[in-house]
Length: 160
Ligand code: SF4
Ligand code: SF4
Image (cartoon, helix red, strand yellow):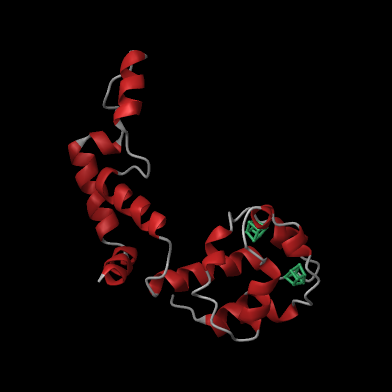
């Protein structure tokens, strides 16, 4: 089901936010980044377009803010949906696109590097592990599945 910003504000109780700041104060990602959860909630509930905010992608979805919010605002759920909207706009970090392309092509967001292969060899492990990435038929089936996702269209649109 497609959602929009007003729907997110409604479904996740953003209007209940009283700007106490507990979410920002307890956000571990905010310690290491510019993520200010309270600000995102404020802007979103005010009807501002937050989909271009890079900070959205700093959230680790740990759910600390949502568990601690005294007003029951579904903060993390809202951030996840806001990201979904941002992706539909083709707006998400390049590193995510790289990982998604790697998953599509190898079924692995972190494909084996020559260094890892070398360590595997030193440890006596098979160079090619028995996983989806290394079984041709499985990888083809996996690729078909990924290709069917709307997400890839967003990536291609964003790369035009
Ligand atoms: S903890 Fe809840 S009420 Fe407080 S600022 Fe964050 S979202 Fe708003
Ligand atoms: S879910 Fe995201 S915004 Fe909330 S505390 Fe965790 S990292 Fe911060």
